[in-house]
Image 1: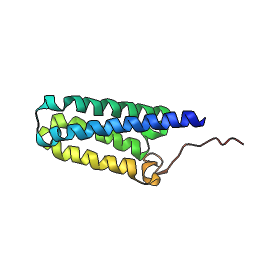
Image 2 (image 1 turned 120 degrees about the horizontal axis):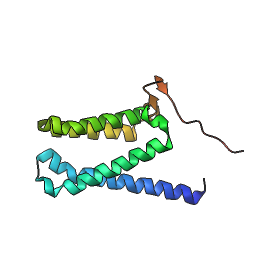
Image 3 (image 1 turned 30 degrees about the vertical axis):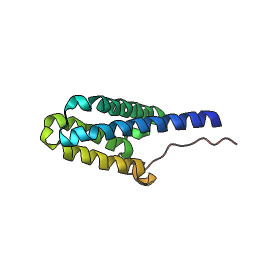
Image 4 (image 1 turned 180 degrees about the horizontal axis):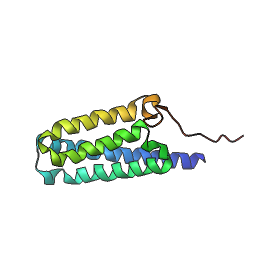
Length: 131
């Protein structure tokens, strides 16, 4: 991969993640404190759309993502988000749980993030080395 392509992909992914975090942060007050929905719904849509794009990019890049803990916990987070409609009185606790899981997914050690629930060990993509 050329250096220009690397930087383009890296900065695009970082920008997408920044928009995702902005959407989550801006909508959190509405979720945690029951603020009028019209004030934060646009931010929520930003968070959900950028999250979906990031998830799609991860799956496209590596199908292993689906069985690695980073992918599995993302699907658990989506399940907790769906629980907002089933148990709306617990939205704040569900939301905080999702945020804590997100930190572990994003900043945990590679051995944790790349752990495969299927293989019961860390798995990584095989890289082809030129030369």
